[in-house]
Image (cartoon, rainbow, N blue to C red; front, side, top):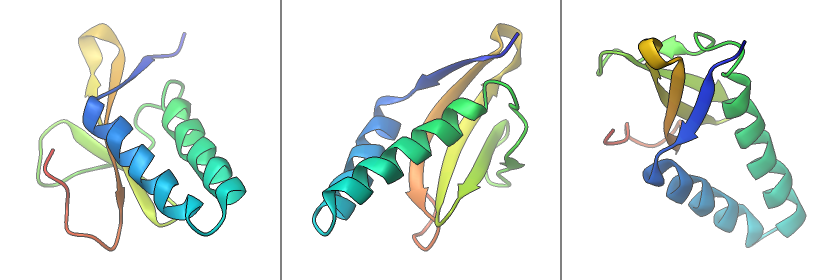
Length: 96
């Protein structure tokens, strides 16, 4: 059985900022891309180690989704994945 995926408030705020930014030019594309990012994050429930280890923090991984990273933490004991942030790959690393 898959893992449980949860979202930190910071991740939800980041996702909202991304969608709002894209929506300024194309609202439908913003919805599609927001759905894509959530689908990729939710796919971690079946493949929790799909992303690569994040060298700056122990037990944090990141999954590249087009030009954005999904930062997440595995809680193996509880079989839980915490989505920590959605972050554009061209920006400096997030504070997570």
